[in-house]
Image (cartoon, rainbow, N blue to C red; front, side, top):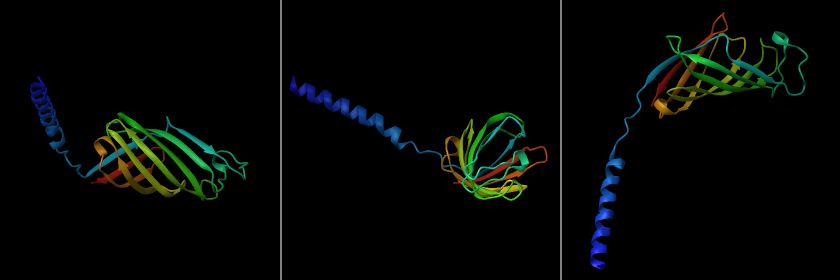
Length: 168
């Protein structure tokens, strides 16, 4: 009886080990370089300001930012066909005081897309600029293993076009 249990145990262990080998032996397909272009429409998002001391007495375009103020925003993202594919969420910390025409901020964000997330930075962002460039730090989903650069271009209708150049 003991011998039968030892043989049975050996068969179970060998079978379990053989079943585990194919799983660990499967190689993942390495990520490939790609360019992704998204549009952020001029409406449908949120824009909130955390106004730290000294408090701004202006409103709208007359608002003055102080170093340490924060901007928190969200915006839908669309692909080239106009289909909604996700949302961008970002927080920016003001690093240079001034109004919308002079203030600058460092931003961190995530483009949460149906196919995965892209984690980005946007250093020294100016609100009055027509474009800005940053870094794609990491990705998940189909973007796992990719990083690179990205550029956002602002348009007169308050929309923007975001272009990501991703490499392994």
